[in-house]
Image (cartoon, rainbow, N blue to C red; front, side, top):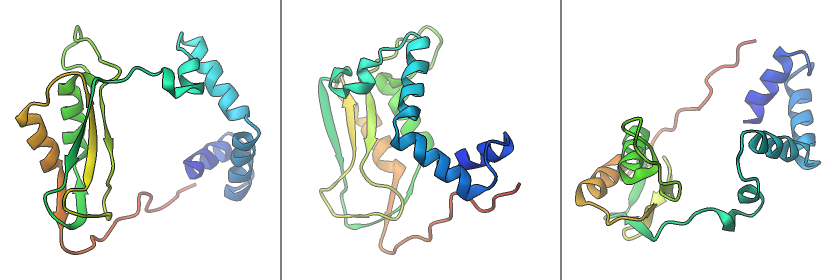
Amino acid sequence: CLEAGSLLLIKTHLSQDREDGIHKLKQVIENGKALEKFLAMVAYQGGDVLQITDPNRLPKANMQIELLSTKNGFVQDVCAHTIGVSAMKLGAGRSQKHDHIQHETGIVLKKKQGDFVQKGEALAVIHTNQALEEQIRNELFNAFTIGDAMPQIQPLIEEVML
């Protein structure tokens, strides 16, 4: 994230180079100006800034269901599309314009690609107000590929072009 922000500062001539950009970004994070600006943006758009400063004010789902691994191994892959569609089906998004979003609903991933997982350990926690349908549980479970060997993890950024 700091890398991308640094590139933006260079493009807008607010920074001379990558290191200077990262230094400036860290400075506004540490002195609180970044949070102050973020809170102002949320307030301007009609959001409740108290939910940011006090996360206990966020709505909470009635149930938190752990999705448990059935075997030991390394997480080879996590299908983000499947996770997103499953979250939408649970109410965290819309499939049609008139659908109501349940803001307390969502999926918290506990494991990512390359992580070791033991049988019985949580891959994810599903926050929902409704019973978890077997189909959605299976889709979520199948979103995680677990294998015996540590996967080769590709870098998120292959090259920075200025």
